[in-house]
View 1: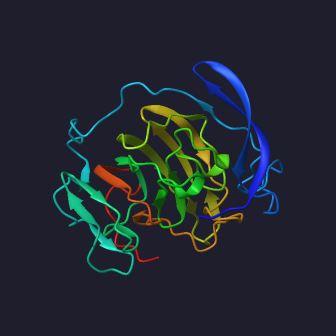
View 2 (view 1 turned 90 degrees about the vertical axis):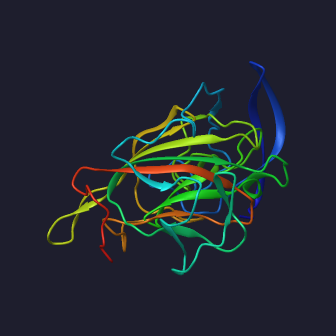
Length: 272
């Protein structure tokens, strides 16, 4: 996504030493204020998450749990379809899928509460900057995005960096690996709930581990995630598919599995 730029001073920790440099950071100061009343959506002045080096994390060599639904094992797109319901036209090679500028894809099945594991890699050759570098996303129910981005030494607005709840909450830390390396997301999702009168009684919550590091700990979402706007729970379904974006960057995915949890313990045919 193309964004305006604001000139600010960023504190960047390099080799353990805090060095302050002036950089043009993408962001907006004319967007709506977030419900917390502190920051604009995509505010460039928001505190930047501390950069850390992640330890060893789950990899494709580890098999999925025995009760998991394998959504992608590197062999085919049998669990996926294009955003318009047709055949997936992404690249399939060497155990991974890769975007091909042919549109978004989403799972055929729908889910409620779940545990999700997937691995992704941005292009090894760095091209572009900010939101133009390795941009993609894990879009839950087609409404709630956990950002995928090359955030290794790549400044952008904090609520749009890798593993952010897009437009809402930056990660607790930046646990990104260098471009081209495989990274992991482990996501525990608690779907929103409504009563019999269609009144919202529980908002959505998400816990996210990026490369084995907790970056969101049961974080509440105030609504769906939007670009330059504050979301809400209007037209949000109680169950939904999982979607992977297409933003023109050749992002790869592999080893995707899901474990439905709680009340929604099986894939749903809900068309809400």
